[in-house]
Image 1 (cartoon, rainbow, N blue to C red):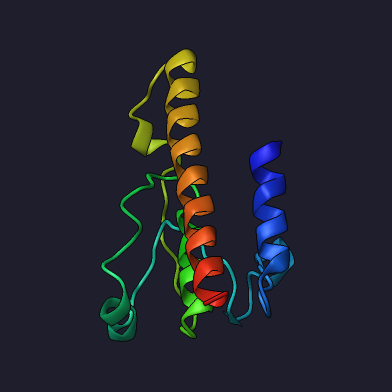
Image 2: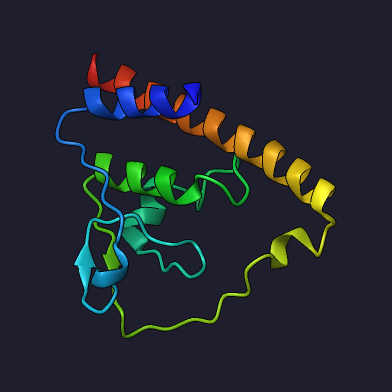
Length: 130
């Protein structure tokens, strides 16, 4: 997958950038600076002073990775607390589409999200090289 390799290369070039995801065994303890799941997010005032919510170029895909990149590059913390539990109904956003339509829905939004993520990585790379 060319897009995945490009993202991996760009992240590898970035100084002090380590992308961390939670493993299932780690879900029962608090964590800092990990990629969070987008079902339930709480933002600080500090975040909103720098950004206006989530990236408008994405819908459902890569939002967490973009959010993680913004926070990491701007010295904002991302915290995970297992004490907070939220029910997340998987698949609700695609409204019960049939299999063919689900594939089209996924493809369209995943491609847009990957493109937005690559643009964001380019933007940060350009800022680092100035």
